[in-house]
Image 1: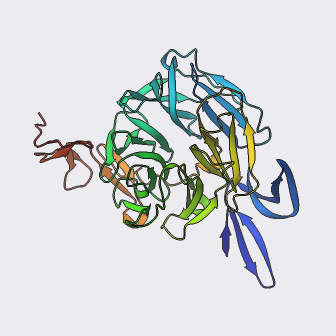
Image 2 (image 1 turned 90 degrees about the vertical axis):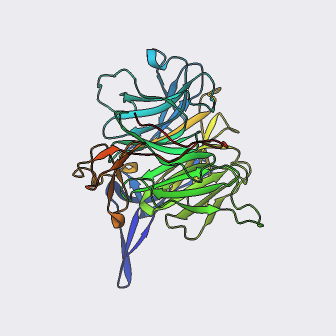
Image 3 (image 1 turned 90 degrees about the horizontal axis):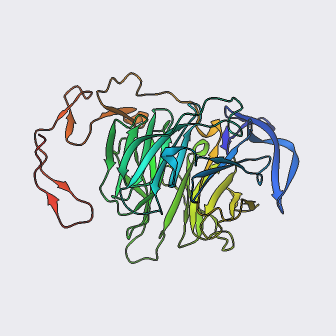
Length: 408
């Protein structure tokens, strides 16, 4: 029994048969040659049921989303938020969805993209039309968190959490209400950039493009931090500007793009063999966002602002360019389909934590209660209480520190 992509190949005596993961159906293989789809006759390919939607946020004077699907990839509908008072004159830094709860979260700032803590995380009910067929009421955008330094965000749709990388050199988490927040990683980070999570596995992945560039992995409570890819002293740089990251959950692989080395690479969750997928100069410039769906990798690139690009995730071939309206500016990218957020058991449901519950691998307990800064868990590992002392709080990239802090 061998799993390849979403296909499970069951070896039989003298033959074989194929089956698919939930949410996929067995069909003939599609190949793209000169931007034209060609089908084979044998059903060995698992295709997600229903349409995949490509969503782009556009960096213009007013916030807009562009929506297309995999049947009409170059035909974009426009969703305009300029009439929403809370979104006027905002620049969207990054966004993500909870597909089943029909919610969108985005980090935005006033004016140009700035490396400051003037950003906010918004929550909004999703629109209808090209995303949903029902004409549900549109709810006003709500600010759930402000004065943060957000660089990239990702939704944990199982446990109702939002994770983000911060320009303050931390990785943080907050619940959907914005009321329960915690910094989970703050050591050995210099310029954390892209982020992704696998709630079923309880794992968090990120890129850091500082002077000690690396691909990192940790449990989703911040524990067991590890650098999967980094540079060895005295050797040529193996990683330089890892600007994007994306998870291929069915295969337990991670993909990233290095905007200095100009390549797309891949390895599994456990830091096994590292593969170069593509290093085609005409396709790879300065990548902005990277996503994976079925057997393809999609990304946006600052060098090519009028298009999104995609290649086969195994070979780097079969390149396709999806053209978007001109003058769209820098674009964030998400792919919208239920199989990208598979149903999974909420291991926090019965934890009875007084503040936050954060997932982690089942082999390490499955979940962990967590407290806000300045608090600690009592002996029952569920209830938070104020710490009696905090001996030292280091400030990011400075020579100063707070030696003591009164919690009163």
